Image (cartoon, rainbow, N blue to C red; front, side):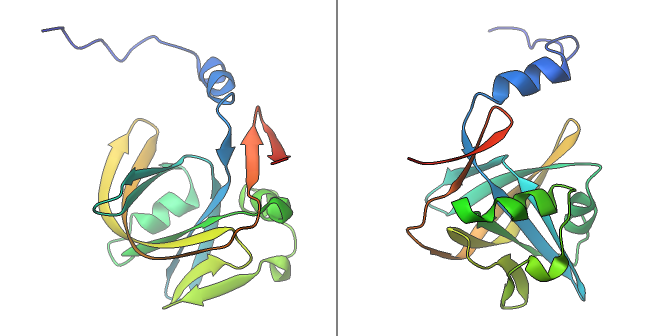
Length: 164
C-alpha cells in the first residue's frame, strides 16, 4: 500500500492552467435562479459522470457569484447550456466581459433559466456538493435535456475555435 502524497508543492497555478489548456473542451454556461435573481457563469470544467443514473459535474470557483448562489439550500437545481459556435459573445458575457443583457437569449424550463440557441441544455438537481481546493464540485442529477445538431463552441489553449 502506498502512502498518500502531501498536497503541498506541485505545479504553479500558471503552469497547471497552461498544461490543462491543451485539453480542448466545449464551452458551457451554468445557470441558476433564486426567486427573481438569475445568474450565469461560463465554465469549461464540465464533465459527464454517469449514464445510470444520469450525472454530470461542474466545477465552480469558491469566489464566484455562482458559488454563492448554488450554496444556498433553497437553490435545488441548476442548468447547463452547451454553447454553439455562434455564441462566443455569450461566453464572454458570462466570463466577466458583459455585453448588453438584452442580447442574452434567456428562456426558462419550469422556472430555471437556460440559454436559448445552445447546442444542448440540461436541467440538473443538486445531487452532491464536494469541496475541492479553491473550487467546489457540484454533482448534478439530470432531470431534463434537449439538444440540436449545431456545431459547438470549442475552447483550446486560451482561445475559441470551431469544428471543421
